[in-house]
Image (cartoon, rainbow, N blue to C red; front, side, top):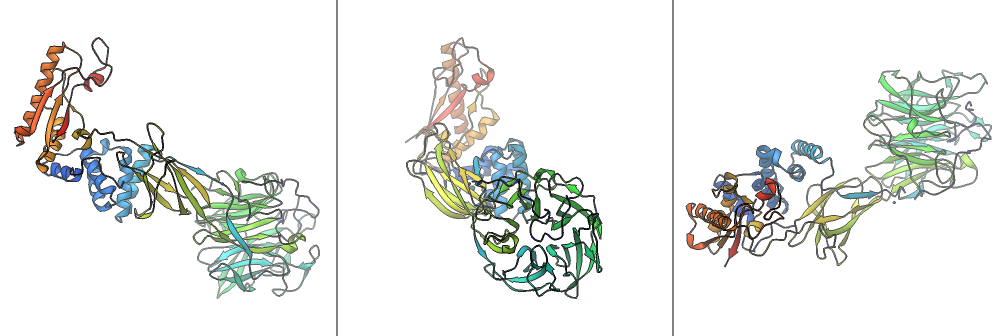
Length: 632
């Protein structure tokens, strides 16, 4: 099928009388908390004291970093997380790479933040803490209103040009008054209009230069420097018309240059042909690729989206069909946003009427993902096309004939003010029981770590925040006796609902269990031995520091064995372990009167490994331990 030049508006790819048989009717529906402890136990002071004595471990650095991180002191958090990564990188848990990245980002060190974030993604697969489920409601929430430059003629196809918009109109007054026979309106010319602060278009004047002719000009796209324009025109250049074998004048894409504030030096692009139409050019974000619509050989439908690589001055690659978005009907009017989102019009997908506006995210190689219909109010039961969007300002434009019943004569341009609101909500729950945690404090933080809003959950454990689109946030939940937990959230660039459930892990420390309060690593003993191992000495140093800082603190040491050996032997061995532990503390200067030590043999096993049960060495190791209880 060949395109008749006598078809003015969005169709451009349909002979007179063709019914849009592929359009389908329907509607597309969108802690502050340190470590649990007695009030007088300052975990940070103890860790700092330990480090001053020369003791260090991954756990000490991680816990010390946490004491600052949960209080939003990112400078100090970055310091200790940095030491963790420098000295114990292989031992660091996934979450600490994320916290390090956040801390360094907040201290104006984006390079290091990016490095740690990459490490976090590599180690965690970008899963880890992130339990957010995005519900894409597809509708593009917006307010639409007609712009001021609309006329009783056809006005459509806007394109951004510096701080202005260039569009096509069939109103008379640009170049000649030649009447289009099928429309009984003048042929279209390009006009430039100003944008006010609310996005309305005013002061439309003909585009200066040699672009406008007595035939159709429409659908421009501009380079970011404003010096080059690609546009659609009937097959007419240098005063000569070109026709196909049926003597029809098809559409072609041309390029013009800005010289002395006028558009001139018009050249035809090499992939055009007299035998088919190509139209509606759109530049990629990096301006290295030109997208367009065409019915050239290889088109699967009535018209497809194609692209060519821009290789240099008037040098282009071979046209490539963007098959993933095309149907057996019409795809046209592509536009690529700053977020690399491809918007286009189609009547070959489930929609509301004739042409609907769709979008698909392009990856870094230009490959499209799932295609979505923008829904109402951008789309209507009429033709909606030529959509463009300034994502930063959330203001765009769309062409539509929804205002009347005369087809393209009723084409008008509408301002699209995006109501971009994201609801972030979910449940704070116990990780082990799945029960809600009433009274949990949930904090919404910005990417810089500053608090935006807080929410105390009720009996149902539910919270809710309203956030902006296309931003990064942190959702933090804290509750007494639970480990704090935070989840990074990136909101989409359209109104959506994000479900972010936050699990909390019960710390469960007994009131007098100092080992639990200080998060001691287990103090284990080798089989049939009671000497203090080097790894145990690091943990005992924490007990020492706590007792030095708090003279009123007394400790009861309880030591245990595994089940191997007879009961009486194990009782004696455990007592030696208790005495060895106490002696280590006394040797460090702790008053013996503040210490008690007792062995319990195999009487308090932590697992199933009792007499006669086959267990691994690792399972037996769990029972060869010392515990520390505080006494008053």
